[in-house]
Length: 316
Ligand SMILES: [Zn+2]
Image 1: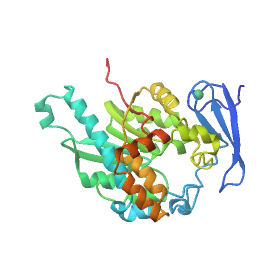
Image 2: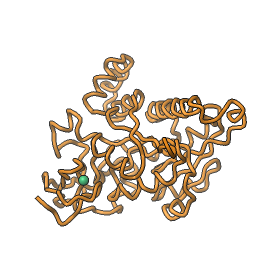
Image 3: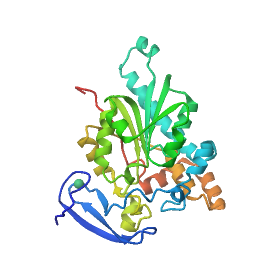
Image 4: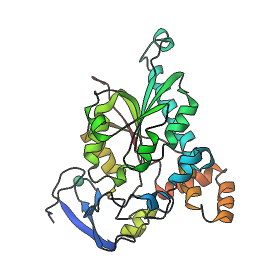
C-alpha cells in the first residue's frame, strides 16, 4: 500500500496504516503508520508542541513519569541518578577506548582539550547539572551545552556552567564541535527525526559519540501489545523506532551504530514507573540489585538492543 505521507525516517512511500487510537489528552483519532521498507512507525497527524505545558512538566499530561519540577529543584533526589551514572560510564568507556586506539599519544593526552558534551533535549537540565558536578570525564574537563525548547530551557539560560542553545544557534554552529551528544528519550517526540539526527551527525567530531535512548517497538512486550503499548502515546511519542530502523537512520545521516549494554538506564525505567507505588517500588529496588533481574527486564523491553552511534573517522 502506498501513502501520500512518505516515511519520516527513510522517505519511502511504502507506508500503510497499522492502527488507529484516540489520544488520552487530545481527544481525536490518531493513525499509526508503518513503513514496510525501514520498519519505522510514525503518528499522523502530528499534534504540535502545545501539549508540552506546565501540567505536562509536572507529570499531569500524557507522560505521568515526567517530573521536571523535582529535577529542576534537585536532580540528586530523583531516580535519574541511576540513568546518569550509567550514561557517564558508557561515555567514559568509549572515550577511553578511542584514546587507547592511539587517537592521541600520551603527550597529547596530557594536553587534552576539554571534552565538549551537548545534551540535545536537556529538559529541566538535570543531566547538565550532574555532568557539571562531575567536572571531568576520562581525565578531560567537561565543557557543557544543552538544547531544548520551552519554559525550563528559558530558566536554564541564567545558570552558570553551561550554555543553552536554541535550534537556530545549533544549526549555525560550526560542524565537528562536540565529542559527545546525548539524546535521552527525545527522538520519539520529534516529528522529523531525520533532520535532528542529521544536525547531530554534523555537530559530532569524527570519532564522537551519540548517546541515544528511545523505546524499542520490537521488544517482546511492545510486539505483543502493538499500538496499545503504553509507549504509543500519540500526542507525544510520534516517532517510534526499533533497532533496525534506528540503525538504518544512523547510516543515512553518516553515523555508525554502536551496541551498548545498559544497567542503570534499565533500573531507572523500572523505578520511575513505580513512583506512585512505594511498596512495590521498594521490592523492585531490592530485586534490581540482582543482575539476572536487570537482564530479564532489559530483554523484555529491549533496552540494550537499541544502539547508540559513533561518527566514523575519515578513512575508517
Ligand atoms: Zn521508512
